[in-house]
Image 1 (tube, rainbow, N blue to C red):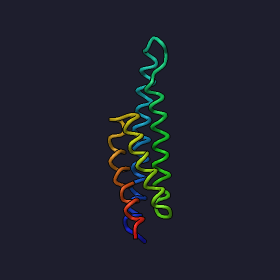
Image 2: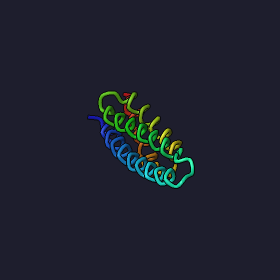
Image 3: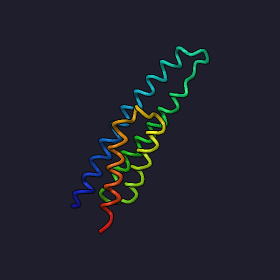
Image 4: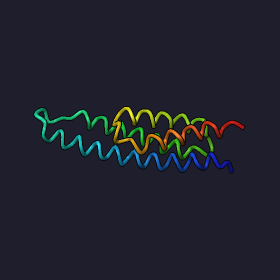
Length: 111
């Protein structure tokens, strides 16, 4: 078993879980913002939902790291960049973990 694939699996799972934490925090902040705004809505809620999607993409990418490392690497890189764009500081833990996991998955697919 390839050590870099196992590392990318673990990093993908950790990054996805950390991304969910940041996304839930963004949804919490967006809910408070919506409660106190005049219009009753907040764009932060939409960004938090996008971050949940990217976290799920990172988790799936991590799960695919052993069997399909190229697809897994691309998925984790998209999840890292998309999550950082959507909720920036809320994704500060998940971004580097998913980035390294994605790079490791892409490197491990070469023999």
